[in-house]
Length: 302
Ligand SMILES: NC(=O)c1ccc[n+]([C@@H]2O[C@H](COP(=O)([O-])OP(=O)(O)OC[C@H]3O[C@@H](n4cnc5c(N)ncnc54)[C@H](O)[C@@H]3O)[C@@H](O)[C@H]2O)c1
Image 1 (cartoon, rainbow, N blue to C red):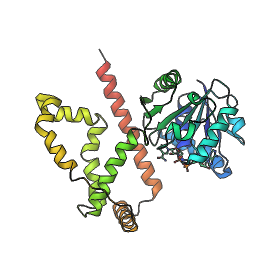
Image 2: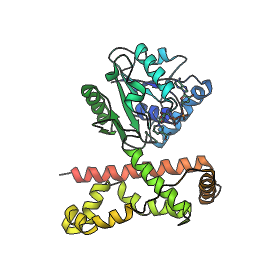
Image 3: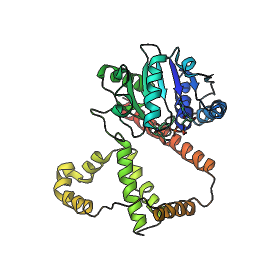
Image 4: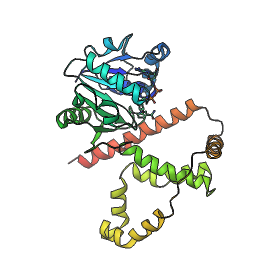
């Protein structure tokens, strides 16, 4: 696949475009909002700079038809609305070449929600990136036609992404369900005044978050069992997991909790502008990727 059409040029469309261009692919782009299209080239160049790539220019298109006309892969990044995506995916199927795969970046919606009634549902694949896709390798795939999903997974592997293929569809896919489970408990801890926003965040970044860039929850607990591995962990600490699960909270997203979240985040970020927080996140993510890539190369060296 050489020609990629980006449909929807907001946060995710920009980042996807930067990644595809950095991998030598041709990108055309459409957004019905003129301001989004005008800002697109500059925003893509900024993300490419974080990747250390020379800025390349996407082809901006006034219509979706023009953007997808030559596409091998259409990447839909429109707002998270069932009605909007249903209509848009139907339209993109009609406009794109017959062999093109249509990938939706939806964070939470299922294939049945948005593509179940399209003319050839198998052409449409959920391909959920993790933000920002130009720096985070995960992309979660689900589609009803295994051959199409396999083709897309091979393509993503070939350009350095790390796809996971879901056996069945699920609201929020995998990574966002895990993120939501963690955030629900973080909000409960805040609601119960166990710690500040800054300290709850630090309890992730200075602790489990460091390990999670290297190993997921299963491998983490395998090593938590010491020389006895996961079997010993389950015997020794399995009951304490159940003890904790029984006390996990169910916070209510009411106005009082929302006000507390906003005040806590403002306190934790001490007036730092969002642009500097984005830049700090992206340079550190890029540095982490480099370090992890170097470690993987050393492991593979003879
Ligand atoms: N932001 C995230 O962290 C994140 C992560 C992964 C996936 N996603 C998913 O990516 C998609 C886009 O999210 P975002 O954060 O980039 O949103 P965004 O609001 O930043 O961008 C959406 C863009 O879509 C455009 N748009 C509106 N109607 C459209 C249409 N009919 N056709 C094409 N474009 C249209 C808007 O003008 C806007 O530029 C959503 O489905 C979201 O769930 C978001």
